[in-house]
Image 1: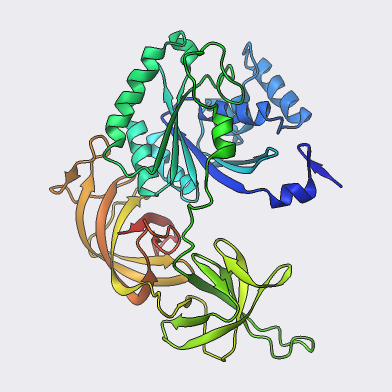
Image 2: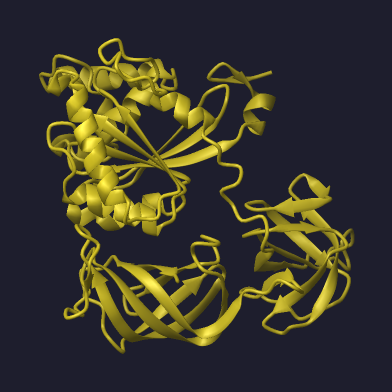
Length: 427
């Protein structure tokens, strides 16, 4: 039986997956932290280590620069910064991990939003010498807006402040004061040195005053089973499966990814927007027929009745229906250098449904430093966060983003360039 990082393949396939992202200001050590996690958990190959060791020597560095493991673009390596979102995968005997290393520069905030949108945990890095800065506030606010359930604040470069406990406690108090205005369900603090490896995988002898868990212990044990919505049944239809082969002559199934709730054979369901009802006859997966399905499984649902269903429709429970409306209120992160146009027309995508919309109103912008509303400035530009209202050309079926991150999110698209210009959270 093959092994992955010392884990047999059967065990590896059944491990729970934690998606997390690293965010923070420029040069706070995000890429170094991920490199350290990969290295100390023995998740890199010898040739990868040799390559970054050689690259570090060529740049005249005295130690191996682990940040080079994630800075994949040539421009990133040359400038020593992160530009694009870098995804890395590793596993321990307890969990599989997908990491999104996101940029710290203000002009790449849109890349940070992309990387954090599917994360279940955010690691906020703070330079112990600088403390909480504007980008710390911006990224923490966006992480809160994106409803990332767990946040771990890593106060990095403790080696450069002589492992001082007072510095750690001061930054912790400052961040807590800011975070009290946010909606953060689970907040933890860890003092670390990504460069030296203190409190990453192994406990730090230099900070014996800290009695909390290491970062890796948190990543392996933090409870994520209840993060998804298993109450409201939501199944956006992605495709209709009609093989029309001799073996499957009468097969008609509706394929997609469960966005919420639990579906079982025999359940009575409703199809939106038609409102017709039917009963689930069977549920098929890649491995064959299954008894029940839940988020985020990809499945095919078969119904007892032949109903006209197409991509963009949604299968729900009869007594648990989402909001249905053409008028939607959003908190939006604007991702385009071209400012938002009031009364402007944009493409809008929600789950598997696509339509067009108009920006009806820009209610206010948000000052990310103090979270105050800016009501006298309606000019929404790159990286701005604002509350707006839109009207779509077709009714959408949605939940509040705080209740379901999948059915509560939309993206706005510039119809001329096909560029994604806004990421919206339905409120």
